[in-house]
Length: 583
Image (tube, rainbow, N blue to C red; front, side, top):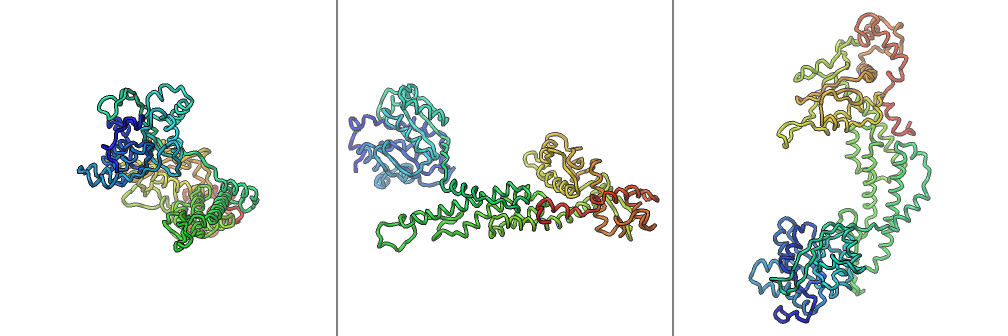
């Protein structure tokens, strides 16, 4: 084994200038080892820069995973290669007494992989290339390092300052352009090899850092493009697809799904054809392990024998079904509870092909859910708006009593309601209760959705989230939303005052709830006011008027003349837009 004392570099390598510790410190300043595992030193010499890297790593390793660094090195001088090999050998590790030096050797998994870096070829990826190349052709070395990192990585390089300051050659000009494009930093250091260095030289240097991952060049998949063209050519104008809400989105999603699966199958087919050439041994007699070097896995599988096609299909289907069931255009009419239910049960959809037929089937199922969900949502809102809460006495003002059919407990919603709703949450930042926009959004959006079901129409360009964000920055009082104005109070209530144009929807809400509870006479909506009995007229007068004889006749006539609005079942009407063909 050649040791450092066995030779000098005088005349052995005119370009060998070991990196001074002070310069190495500047080169490594700010280096984050969190995502650094593989390192290349292209002109390693006897390992001075690698040792500096390891010293820095040992200081910082507690802030990241404490692991061995995978370090590859190139060195053109055979004598220096021997010294480098010795400096990181087990032999030297046993010889040194300093524990820190032992750690430096032990934590560096060093491999001398080539001699001349300019002729080095590898498929391996490095997170960091750390280099002090020969000053004579440092531009070529740095250009090659940058090219190697095109897939993503960092480069830290020490160059002769003249290479940067005086770009008189085409190579230096190319280097300067690339460094500018990559946003590299350049720090000049005067007389870096003057005093206290192993080899002295009167030279200024430049420390160059490309410390942001270099963008990877976009690579086109021939499989993908071929399958995409085939799918576009075979697109079937399926009427069922166009019957769906957001038909264009669904058609594109189906096409994208088919393209992805077809491209994957093409890839698997090509892989299977390559398997015989990717064995773990060249000896045909050693055939006990049939697994190839490269295996295909699905998801987070660590090891499988063969490609599990069915598991792959389940995984990719799940991706597309999840996207569809999160799409607001497709599920927007579902209540928040129904949306949650479908998202929570999306796993079962992985068993079904992502096709127009199956999308239609789930849309039909959703229509049934909407019919049930709309009814429940309307009745639930009515109950919330007419409930009495003893801890909030003002909520009793919500209830407007009227003389019901065969009951004296009939009631309806008026122009204002107060709801016990907590939209203020404790903040550790301010040690107090602050308005929570997300909670308010969830509450208000469900209220607005019910008014949508009742036949309401939101203002053009209306955005609830934007309205609440604006209110959050200003006043939480008298906020005008789609169907009402709202005040938020920290004690746990919200006050709602319905807009004049919303009152027909409130009337429809009251009629729907009252009919479901049999608070209105059986003849309501069927017989004219004049043809009703005295008892029936009394209920109508109390419900639509002030209770005096004939006070409800005019409003009842309006209901009868606009029966398609006031008397139709909103649950059935709300289901139609989701899937026109379902009706």
